[in-house]
Image 1 (cartoon, rainbow, N blue to C red):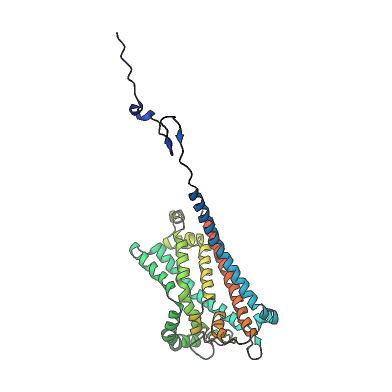
Image 2 (cartoon, one colour):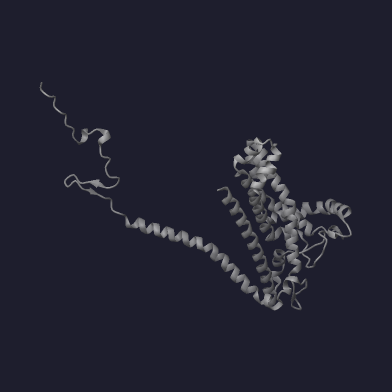
Length: 346
């Protein structure tokens, strides 16, 4: 028998499974059979380096700017800190004519208003965050979250004007008399004395409204990020919905919630306009929250344009330096707590 001829296949007829895929880049030279690679574009390498160096420059600008503020404000306030020493933080005297300055009332007022803001805002913000992350229906969750976040976008001067014409009269006629008549005790004179209207309590309450969206936003994000297995494990053991939230969800997110609260504290420490309009601006220490007071931010805003002597200006810069250090420490602690809870989740 004559054997059948073996069919020959050319390059175009090679089976697909055996066909060489060819080089990823470049082109083949038909005469020499070599592959020519695409040349490296030198301009692209230069552009990548410029882009990387630009990003590094902008990233380094942030800590450089922070360090610059620290150095400039600290050096400007150093004459007052060196002149008065530690008594600058403990004295309540404020006499620009005789050159006597003490920042204790402003420091105490800053701390008191911030504490009042956190005491009032934290339960409200945490309750809202729990509702939005655990109980809110899907059609209501997004609009309500947007409205809560919208509170952070309102300018502080708007809060101040609203507080002066609506919130302050309400406090003076209804809330403050009730607190003085029902909560005033001889051992705790926090709600004693005459009612002026502008007071530490009014400034603290307006700050509570202003820091509420910050605490609520951070708490909501932390609660949403809690693994589903935490809830399912608690429910599988027979816990109710509330017991699951209290015993499994909140303890897991505790560090992040505390970080959000401290971020709100940092926001409250540096607030200026709304507090200046509602606190009364009296430079003296008082045990009553119904009395007018002062904060470091409002002190700087009220007196910086009136400072005529070098010592007066240096004193105001020293107050700003103390406020800057307090805010920086508070925000650093908050960032560390949020970072810690993020690392635990990972």
